[in-house]
Image 1 (spheres, one colour):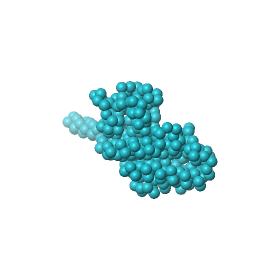
Image 2 (image 1 turned 90 degrees about the vertical axis):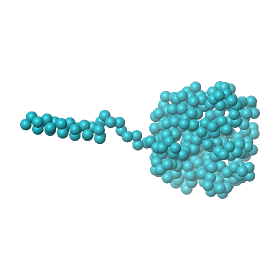
Image 3 (image 1 turned 135 degrees about the horizontal axis):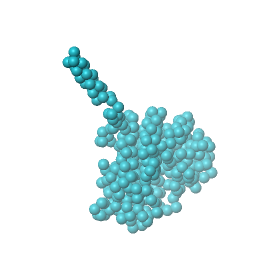
Image 4 (image 1 turned 180 degrees about the vertical axis):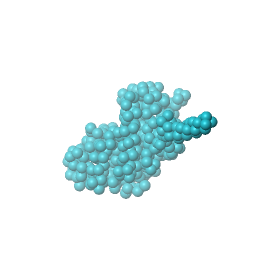
Length: 347
């Protein structure tokens, strides 16, 4: 009898142990977001300031202190796409068509892809500033769409004549409330904004149907705003190939921002069926180690977007360093060398 009791106790213990190993609370949950490290994504940098910096005497150096041409240096750090903004009639030559073409030719010469970012303004366009180019002021929507179309074609023709066909084109920059205000302000007239986006889309495709068109919005964590804007564009028949977004967290809130951005990316892919791309990121230069963690995690989350539709992550003006324009969110130190933030792209 005693032997039988001992046998029963042993069998029960074995069953409990097996159950704990199979699904007990002590075992960590599986990480279902892990994807292979070699899942290809685009790693980009907007270096639109580079010619202005060079003309001002700034140079760039690798970690050993050896001087290197800026784009070649970024390429050595894992960057494979160069993003360039273009303004219609800027106050100086920088960011005008000729300047953009010269920089794009340099990128192509290194075997890098090019993303052209049309601001459709004479100066900065962002969520709070979407000034209509002076030469376009006073136009009604039919003339405005025609003008935007012709201008887009002219810039892309200039690039093509120089041997560059961009892989990506943004029709507008951070168009949270449309572009070319007041005519194309989305919260006032979504139909007009959709018409401008549609005109830009058709212009790009008239040059080369393989160029992917991006509609770019800030605050990649804000799912409700993305739904409002893209539902509006869709309702008026506008087209896009990629949904672009910006993400500029602080050193303290980046984990929450990244999680919300991940949720947003997957929701947008499910709702609209188009890929997503992080067109701009940045963090204070003096938070380089934290920035490395932020970008490394974000790249991981982009790779894990459902259906392989997370396309890439781009740093905005990483090459800037003091005292150039006092911009504080770069990824180079004050000696012109990349910080550890850039290691996230190489790794």
